[in-house]
Picture (cartoon, rainbow, N blue to C red):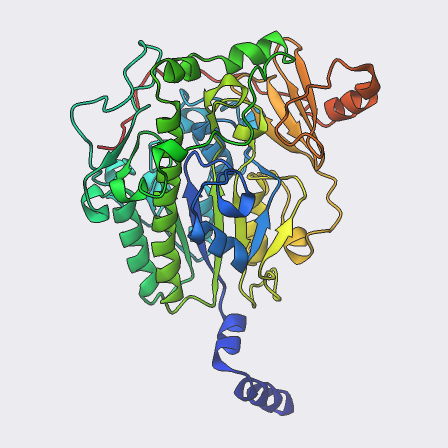
Length: 481
């Protein structure tokens, strides 16, 4: 009787929002941004970028400045994040494979949350051009069609700016400022409209709500107002660009770097236009993120929602003579990662400190374990990675883990620690970089005798066993229209 009275008086004395934070599991807002490198203000990747909303979210929670994707292309990266299984264990290494052919029975993150009492819903691109309908309670567009893309404005005729260099060129490698409004453009505007509606309404269950922003994925078509802050005559190359940067890279790295795109783009006089369009597409993605953050702030759930933002991999715009993704270099492997945890979350009652920064090397595969810990759910036995909760509590906590980024062959990968990076190619070619003093990886130290001990140390951190590459699919994916 006395205990009951004491508990009642305790609740009466507490503010209502504090009582709710104790009695409710936190919601999760899980935001993916496609093909975004470090060209956002809070990561300092390009001096001309304009990303007030990315910076706003980073200022609210923790920014991981040394986060790495698990794979250097969309399909293996996203499949790893949502399954919790790394490519070298699943055998899913490339965009040409199908997730459900390689991992037919794996339970994905939204389904895991749904099975533990959450309402799991999403919109936009979370997996590689599929929705995987059984994994979600609700989706926009209609999940039964298994196509994650809403209506998106498509200019005609194509290409608009960049001529095709041959059959090797991806048809969506093109850019243009469109004379349309955000609403007429559709795409991510429609995704964020639907996400905002879900955020603003009341929910009986805690939610796992996934928002997939497609830009800055190609084609870099966005409304012209997003090009205006970036006059073409003022455009600068990224700070990581250096001429003849492949000279000290072994043959396997040179072959991967020189993939014909950059040479073709320069020959067509389109390099500055490409950089301009990428910056504009990031600026557009930032505006769409702002719509989501505004909706959250206006919602009943604003004080009880964990926000996680990540990109599946980075992007080269001339660095290492490369254009696109698919590499082990930092321009591709390093990604934005931000986590904002409100006070009262079961796994981190104190929440994240606003404006916190972590320099430890972390991996996107860590997100599965991190979210189950934060939400008080049992850990999934098959999920790999390491919970980031110790770092969310204290960004200077000991962290003995290296981050692995897989390339499209089983024995081709990169290993990242806080101050060093190692790249290994199938066949034995190697690269070693001191990123504390050489953040753009301009000097390969692998062949220098002074660094033999460091090379041995980095080799020891690599995966020991690689599952064979599963069969490739020849099925073409549906692109947004």
